[in-house]
Image (tube, rainbow over all chains, first blue to last red; front, side, top):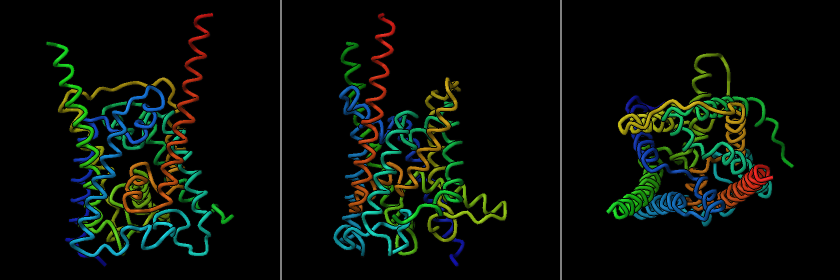
Amino acid sequence: MATTEVVVSILVSTLIGGIIIGYLSQRSRMCFVGGVRDYVLVKDTHLLKAPLAFLIGAVVVFAIASLVASMPTWPWFITKSLMPIPGAPLAANAAVPIYNHIILAIIGGLGIGIFAVFAGGCPLRQHVMASEGDKSSMLYLLGFYIAAVVFMAFILPNIQIF
Amino acid sequence: MTEQKERKRIIKHSYLIIIAGLVTGLIAALLQITAGVGPPNTPVAYGICIACHGRDLINWIINAIGETNLGYGTLVAGVPVLTVVGIVAGAFISSTKNKEFKFRTTKNPGVSFVCGFAVMASALILGACPLRAVLRVAYGDAIAVVGFIAISVGVVISAAVIKVNARRAINREVT
């Protein structure tokens, strides 16, 4: 069981990190889906810079961390090859073949891409817009969190190995 | 003079989005390394994920209130992380401070609701929201590369649908 200090430090650090991210994404209108959408629709690359900068920032931190401390599983592709990363559905089950995870990734990715554009932005952008007082984004969040409960309760147990 | 000002504003905005993306990436990786939002007890590349963290939070709360047993990802020290709450708080602080907070009504509430539902379900099938998909790519996960390409393809598909619909609407107005 974790000590109280550990719990408090995790809660506080994630809360502060989230506040910084929320503040910056409100100022910059950052959207991870909007970049590709704007490029396809009007050949505008402005929003594409955010995911690219995100990627660079994260890679730099991971690389420095692996130099100074031990990062046993980074980079994942070299240490674990095509193993699914924990947190993906069915990742805990080692018997699931790899093509299965790839099919799930394709289905999930297509779903996110198609519906995020109709909603008007990625989940991060919808949270930011709801905080700005947009009622359609608030309804989006309602559906978002109901789906979290419904998915874990009813859909995930029914995802079969195929 | 105004043109110069406009150009300056655009350049400032373009720096802002790069800084925002960079800082978000740094925070996402640092949360995993320092706050322990990472191995060995938790999923790796889990520093930020709107869908997963939101799911962990809501299901943890519902489990705490009712006697349900909803599943969630592995929790750090048994508590859900608060990044999603922080994002909403930060965006609210920013929008009120810069006088951009305004209640806006919606034209078709059903569409937003269904889209939210579908995006969350798809994100949990992929095991990542768009942010975590990029974070997983940074962590070196090949399946996340497939996932991000699939997201882009999905965006292209629905952008094409929007384009066709817009063209049809224009034609209808003309004829």
